[in-house]
Length: 164
Image (cartoon, rainbow, N blue to C red; front, top):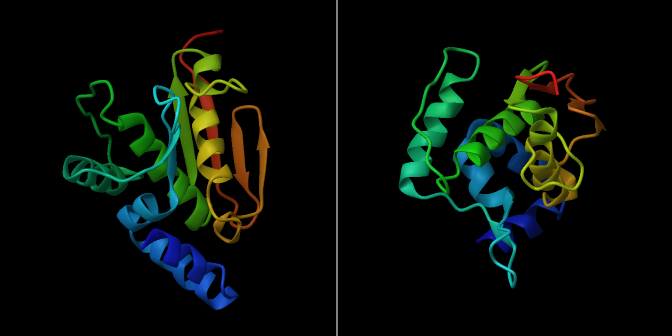
């Protein structure tokens, strides 16, 4: 299905707009069809589609529903995809909502945005955008710890919880 959806989106501006509208309305469609992950532990296939498990579907819907409405606290264990899910929900809002302002926070500035470091949050956002079909990516400006969507005025800002 994924390949035919990508071909459809690239077939016309109308098709691209239709799929973008579907992405703006459904976080699970957006993530499962258009996002890719970097899996450093797999030397042969380090780039994989972001295909969610049922537990991740529930979590992603809850994360998406909480944005802008209330705080959300969740138990997080390694390799469950929590960081990727939060970033995906924020990126979708950044892409499709007017004047969305989101913040990405981690312990140090390098954990937030360090070029070439797959562990940093903004590296992962960059990865999402680089692996997305070009017809879905908005015109944007990327600077240190900042991602600005030129088309709709949305921003994602990074910050660290320490001075370094």
